[in-house]
Image (cartoon, rainbow, N blue to C red; front, side):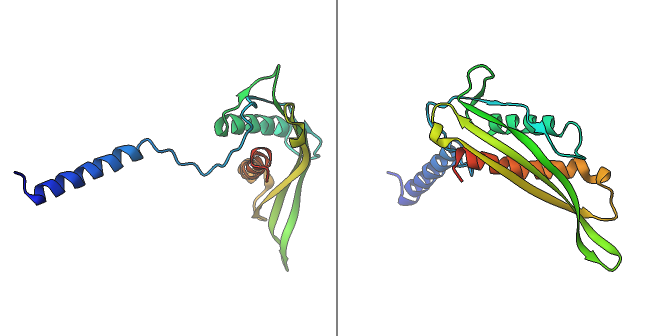
Length: 172
């Protein structure tokens, strides 16, 4: 007959193994994506670039970033021919302004991008919307925009893309 200590050790070991192996199969996500079950496909039109002084490929870069974000964070499939959800719009502003001025001039500059987005759900028209999304990033005034533009655009796009996904699929 086994002692109580031996039984207790085996029981604790069995519990430990159960917790260890079952936790390998649990998937946690902080994304609360909510898409109607019949919505399976999406399409992102190439956004227009109506912003003066912006990089020539800004609209193409944004359109591609939105496609990638939707593919990476939803179960939707990209479909140009028969999409259930369509994103379109334009980049309407790309502005640099001085912030936090001091006696010697501005100590910070701000790049701000505004993107107008239209969301059309061909299966659930009540979910359609149009909305401008604006975000900014600051940079030191002793740096030129050319030096920091690429990283600032990525930072701004990341926030705007999160906001678009939240509005589209979380109804924020």
